[in-house]
Length: 99
Image 1 (cartoon, rainbow, N blue to C red):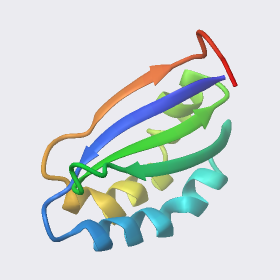
Image 2: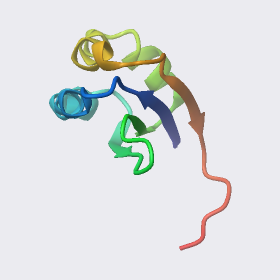
Image 3: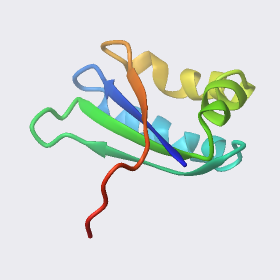
Image 4: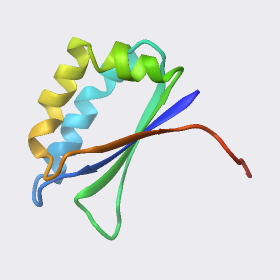
């Protein structure tokens, strides 16, 4: 299992519209091959800064099956216009677990 982590910066004043776009995109992730769930968190200190977390069965499910799909293009259509900087995206896997 892999986690996609995306740091998303949005233009000031567009936060609610951006969040509505992400809400609309949930079905795109639900039906994506190998996707086990997603969530987005908003920074308290920087209200225009978000972190998107998506659980994928494999990196290929994210980078090939999703990123090359019409659903990814729809994701970008829903939220891409609100970015104030290019997203920073990387993948993680569990290294240490506590609670």
